Figure 1 (cartoon, rainbow over the protein chains, first blue to last red):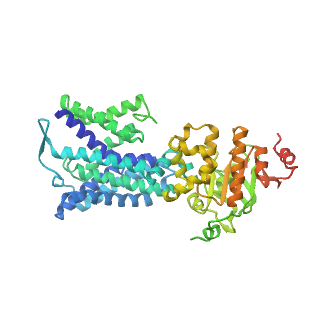
Figure 2 (tube, rainbow over the protein chains, first blue to last red):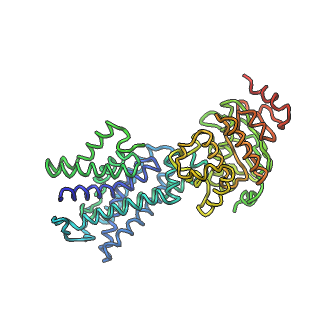
Length: 277
Length: 244
């Protein structure tokens, strides 16, 4: 039971971290290497709310808004001029991530920051005492996933985004404001990344480079998902399980590289990864 | 509201004027000085063989290919440089030839994408159901599962969703059986009669083009080679230009 819960909650954390990157990759067709920086920004929103003595839960909406606003500025002034040069756009996001990391260092120093747990203690689940916070992370992943799917399937923005993903030229020809769709998608992606940063604070040390480690895993998962939300959920579950099992029974060091190795293997066998597209 | 939007207004067809239009891709100018006028309520057919610049001309009007020279005006106001989203908001409808549908989206979603807000959706759907009743019972069906003829009718239905004042149609008769072509022709003529829409069609099907058009122009190597009214001698005149 403990192992099952570990697998589920690990998959949930991976899903929350990767979903923002998936949104941006799906619509904009670029890998946003500033994703790790947005995660860090979110975590520092939790640091700020702690310093201000606010309720720790305030950090969640704050991070989404701050991440979305910074994402909007990045899309408008850095990414948008580079859409016709995708390699340059990817390099620009990498540079942006470095700049954000340095700005955070300037503002908060290099020291590891401490934040209070959103939820503490354990819950007895079928005879097993389990971290209440990890269960909250599982619930958060479900809420974020359902909300994201509802936005994609049930709103005009979601419909326009799907149209842009399928055929951007046709979408433009029909009068869809593709620039607006890209902007809103980038904002949502950056906002979700920052939101995941808050959720990671009890699980990961908060420092200016904390997002970098998570970026690699998220990148591999999004590559395997190939732009598909169900495929991302499946990849998180499969690779999360592998990470937990290898860490538990073989070696935590090997467990930490399980996602990267398995993703490379899956993509070698099937370039579309877990996606049917 | 822009001057063009004021002039387009909600009713009647638009007056489209292309003057010495030059456009193309990379180093090549595919369209080399095309001048065409589609008057309010008029249907004009742009004819020509493959690679002569017909589709590029439509895409230039639509703002999808950059205008390199000349001018494009609607009701006397320049629309050069406007994005497709702004032109659509002004009442321009487009039925493309290449990859014209979102194959994995439902028929309803394909139609829904043509209107700016869902508040206008029901009314617009009822309007196109009058022309194409088969769509009504199959709204949830993926567009890619329709037959070729049904897909063409869906493309036209989508272009009519926003009650366009100017309609650009790219080779809609391609690969269709005569009964479907007749249906499309009757829809276009009916829509023109009821709304006064102006239509510019790009075609290779001479019979269809001359059946619906008031005037024609033949495009050859990016230039207008000949033009005239859809008079009884039009077919012979056009064929002279289209022969190999």
